[in-house]
Length: 152
Image (tube, rainbow, N blue to C red):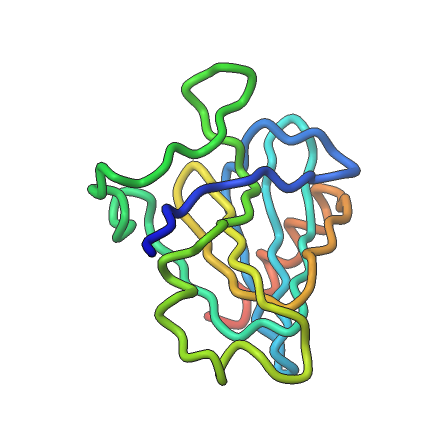
């Protein structure tokens, strides 16, 4: 039986985010992932994913499923043409490509999450719900500055 992939919104509390302008990622040695989100005028977020087994980032116009006309529509914001940026992917096609032994074990079932920004799409498979926390613009810029300085 083939069940269609669909999407559910996950809340970005404490902020009510309408869009994500950009993402900065830090993959940690213990299989955790921290995502810093520039959310424009609404503020900025840090999203913590623990027990990550896989993640992938694509430029928005090069996302593999972009041309798949059978894909279920993503939730929009207040009937606009803009997609809600924080999603849980239900019956994930990508997650189904992993062997069962890779996704089960000491944890509950893993979940596929997706973050849509104005320039990138981030997919994450994690054993835990993501933790959202508000950060200041200075905190966001300090992370970006740290990365830029390390690249010089």
